[in-house]
Amino acid sequence: MKRNQTVLFFLFIVVPFFAQQHAVIPQPVDITWLQSAPCYLSDPVKIVAEKGFLSEAVLLAGELESRFNCWVVLVEEYNEKEGGTLIRIGQDTDRSHPTEGYQLKVDSKGCLITASDPVGAFYGCNTLLQLIEADPEKDGQYCIKSVDIKDYPRFGWRGLMMDCSRTFLSMDYLKKTIDRMAFYKLNKLHLHLTDDQGWRLEIKSRPKLTSEGAAFAASSLEPENFSGYYTQQQMKELIAYAAQRHVEVIPEIEAPGHSSAALYAYPELSCSKLKVPVYPLFAFEGERLNDVYCAGTEDTYVFFKDVLGEVARIFPSPYIHLGGDEVRTQLWKECKVCRNKMNELGIDSEVLLQRYMMTRAAENVLSAGKMPICWDEAIEGDIGKDWIIMAWQEQEKGRIALQKGYQVVMTPTSHLYFDYSYATTPTRKVYSYDPVPPDATEDEKSRILGIQANYWTHIDRWESRIDYQLFPRVLALSEKAWSEETVVDYDDFRKRGKQHKLWFHYFGIEYNGNDM
Image (cartoon, rainbow, N blue to C red):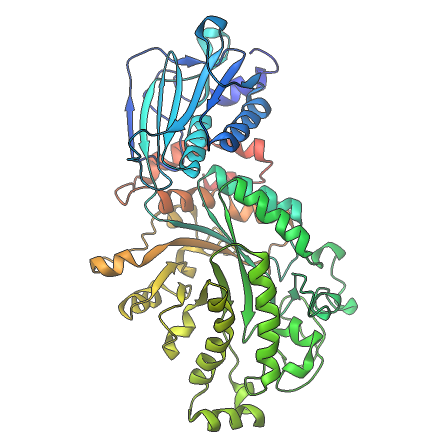
């Protein structure tokens, strides 16, 4: 247990060893420090996992080996006479732990993690990892103080959106993102796969989406790695990787606006029929932006059926995000085919035309047994209550959606847009966010699914710069999504956060150390 520990030892010692403090993020619901001696990690560390928790045990073993240089073995039963440290992962006998909840008990005899489901056990394992520290009185030997922790999340939706369209994100970086999310108990990875700047998912029935719509125009002089797409097989592998770590991957296929890349590949689906090249950011050739599907042509709805049918088969998630934000409805006003469709439907506003279009697109999602999600603009047209609303513009939009009876994920620009500078949205501001309006009714509170931060890759586009924008703000997001509403002490959070520099080092994160 003393192999290669010198650097790790000094990184761990940031508070007096036996102080009744911890560095767990997010803050658990209940922590009771026990009087018995710590549990020392003595080789071999033996993990006993009950049926149904083997995958979580394997992941824990890998983390103990790679981060703490432990010798770990998985055994069917522990024999105290043979020595070594015991970690037992099992089902709580009365199944009293809430969904995703767990109990972690540590004493001198070993560590016991109990949960009602594998995800709870997984989170218990991650809390255990965060409690490991080095004892200076025993030559830096790793141990966990004796403690009894009971924990469960405040919200079921604890999300992060990554924009793969404006800048293609490598498969390796997405896996790193999943590892980091899972460690901090975030569970929804929302992938923004299509936009004006690129179509990033292979659709076999519509091959030009990636053969033409996945790369920037040569004249834009973009770095080659900023373009690209994911094959369906690659995406399935990513989904499986995420699922093992209890992260759900949710796809977004943007419509009816923000669709220039798709309409470059299939210009006949646009109102103008123009083939406008795909450019980065907002630098387009000329002044006309061809970014809205024609709502009047039936070919558009055939396209949605083809695309969303394949997307539904690729992603096991019960959700598909269909966009719906910032639609340039002026193009519909100028389109004879769209005006004819409005006359046929007996509607007199483009807001209602958008509702019609998105409702038809959602039919493909609902028929696949999934729920459609959209950005908050859709509530202006009173889209059906079978939609989930993501309130991005401001908190009040979420409040309105709740009053209208929708389920809502809160993700306002004011606190949760991590592409914004730290001067605009410092970690302290993220930590101050509460998604529950103070005057919300109990029914409205029950329909707040949770919170999500969004990262748009239109400014900081290199992976190291994306890391810098995400961290340490992701830690504040984690605590606001998981911990109880009474957890509001930023100074305490900041003290714990400073001790996570070690974990940032392990994860290879280029973080903003000035905002911790």
